[in-house]
Structure formats: C-alpha cells, structure tokens
Length: 359
Image (cartoon, rainbow, N blue to C red; front, side):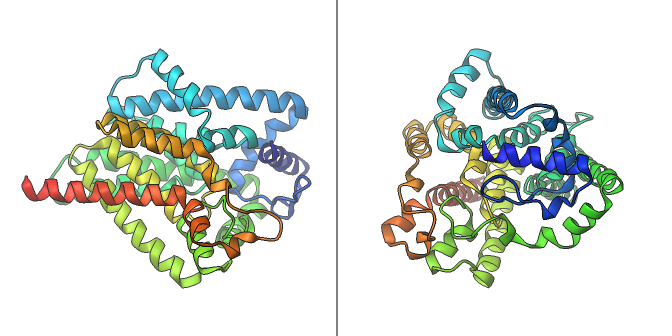
C-alpha cells in the first residue's frame, strides 16, 4: 500500500514542521503531489502503526466502495437497495481501477463519494457543493464538477430557466474550497505558498507522462509520439476535449439527463488531467451502471470485462521506459480507458444532438 505510506509520511512531516514538498517517501522516493490541505487530513494516520493502518485503510475503502456503488445506483436509477449495492460492489472489487485503489491505499473512492454525495442530493439541498469543494481541496481534478454546475446554471440563467439548483452548489463548492485552502495557508504558510506558486504547475513531478498507468490524453499522446513531453499537442487536444466534454455534460443536464451529465463530466476530468493514473478511473462504476440501465446490456458487459481485464498492463512497462517504444497493438491496449471515455462522450454527444434536432 505504497500510496498510503506516502500519505502517512506527509502527515508526519506536517506534525514535525518539515518541508512538505521536499519529502521523498518509501523505497520509491515518491513526492508529495496533493495540495497541503490533504497533508493536514493525513496527520491522524501517524497515530497508527503500519500494520493497523493497512487493515483500517482496506476496511475503510471497502466501506467507501459500497457507499460509492449505492450513490451510483441512486444516480442512474433514482433508487437503490442495499443488497443491490453489496452485489455490485462485490463485482466492482475485481475491476482494475478499484482493485488498484485498494492495493495502493488510495483516496479515489473517498473523493468520488464526496462528489456523488453532492450530485445525488435533492435540488436546492443546503449543503450541496460542500463535498465537491472538499474533494477539490484534497485533489484538484474534482473542481471540474463545480465548473460544470456553474456552466449549467449560467446557461439556465441566460434562458430564464431554473438556475438556482445549479449555481448555488457551484458557489458552495467554490466557497468551501476557498475556505479550507485559506485555513490551510494559515496553518502551513510555507507549504501553501510553494504549492500554489510552483508545484501546481509542475506536472512532471507526479511521474513520467508516458507511463502505461497514465490513462489521460497526455499519457496517450506521450506514448503515441514516443516522447515524455507532448507539449503543445496535449494543450490543444486537452482544451478541445475539455470544452467538448463539458458541452456534452451541460447539454445532458439541460435535457434532464442528470446521470449522463455527471458521468460525462467525470470522464472529461479524467481525460484532460495531466496525469490520470488507472486507479483514478473508479468512475468506471457509474459509467458501466449508466450504460447498463440505458438498456445496452451487451455494451455494459463488454466495458465491465475490459475494466476487469487489466489489459493495459499486458504491454511492456517498467524500468527502462519501454512505453516510449510501443508498437500499434501496444498503443491500443495502453489507451484502453481513454478510448472508452472518448467513445462514450462522442456517442452521448451525437445522441443529444440528434435529440435536439428532432425535438
């Protein structure tokens, strides 16, 4: 559980008053990559020995998986039975993103639960937005959900629609993010200044872009171009994908397709992030459930099989960076999650466009 040990080391560094972003933890010498607020949350991890911490983290992640599945079922069905959530969670354990999250002791399920807790509340819920704000303060990628809420609310305001249920949680998310980030800056001024003025702009500190585990557009481009820095190509393609993905999410929301909107936003966030490790793709759970509930059972089963196949790890990877020398078949396998997300967004966008033309 290498990432869990990094989190523990971050908490210990905060307690000792050390330099958080000079930290190198575990035998792999992994750096701190999250905002300093996350390190504050990790300080209680130092109160347990490693064996107890591993057991507790595994139990907590399994409980979070059940909660995530329950919220995913609420998202796609509007109702969820406990036994259904347990059965789906038992199957989801075997898909690569979830299994890798458990293996590494990652926080992906916690972040996903925070986001979905907000997005499955009744419209106008007073605390909606807090979960997204907290998730973004721990790790920046979930902030795109606040952008999605904001864009949807602004479009509805411009067309005299019901904008309050969208703009209110967007502002709540922004306020929560700003509040906890400000409090963290007061507690950890040096680390906060260093992160927000320097580290946040250094994507390379997270790892090599071309690594097979990097299931983002940047990772695919790095492997396709046989370079560790796809440069301007990634910026242009990620910007286009971000705009397109958000447009699909907003269009779905405007047509009452809430589940589609949420999953489209999640897929977009994973695609445009500089680094989206394979374990970040726990959002495959609501994606597969959404496709299943739409009646395309065969497609959903095929997607689930791909996520459970670990196929992206069939290609050479590791020490001497073989990802920079991939052939055509290896490029396809190592772009598996990105390809599925792009196909999902393209198909959803086309269907929404056709629906709008016939409406």
